[in-house]
Image 1 (cartoon, helix red, strand yellow):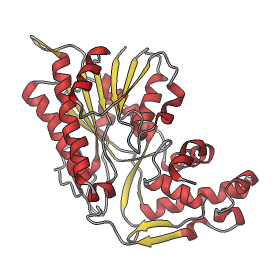
Image 2: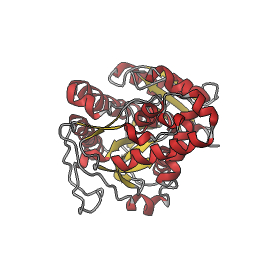
Image 3: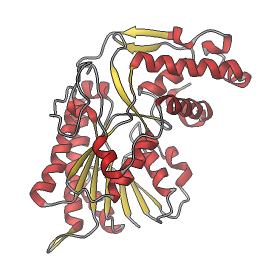
Length: 355
């Protein structure tokens, strides 16, 4: 049994992880600390609100007094740190917000863990600070490059990626300087239920349902490795159980795909669902598929983003060797499950999308 503090636990990946963790039979206490900014929602945690092992604290990870109180009050022995500003476009226009949350917030959490877990001999047995990061810290690959490994140099391109790289370095420094028991995971592009509509997959789905343009940056040939969020949650659990203090692991989906091809796959899935389900045609009459047209015809190529990385790819071999776990969901399976979830959960995304 663990007593976990999950920062950013009302967000996309964090919220999925909280639900995943509380479905396990271990009897954990899971305390969520979330500032409930635009991308964090209590509704994401509705299914666990009444769970005996769930607690929620509304607050900011940069509030040192609050973080220290939470660590002490709930006798936290494990921190799983998801909380982050994560949208690259926003980081270009508001980089200071990303530095505050992603860098300063991480430092506050590290200090609080140090204070809570330190004993005369070093640190309490069994404690862990797990930091969740991104493959964007490695920069961009060419089409012929081998995928990123844990030994790839850091070459962040955006303010977001730079802020996450800085937080990774802080976590390692607190381990090497003070001995704090840490682990780090750098993941590829996640997708799945509860993702905020500014991200590619839900934005394309919801725009298609409402007959709105599907904006694709540049030529759409940017390549990403896509990881279904439940596979990410499983990987984190296995890392927490593994004797890997001080180590970094890449978590990938082994599913490279161009942005344009991904959008085409989503459109094909919607077209097929609408063709076979009259109820969808009635619910979303503005969707081209409701009238026998193709959703892909909504694609609109727009000016490419500044500093847009061309390709990301993750080699998760180290994770698979140490934990025995790899991606279970193929990209077609994950996209099908994601489309189904968004079609069924307009109650969740409706207030966010305004549709």
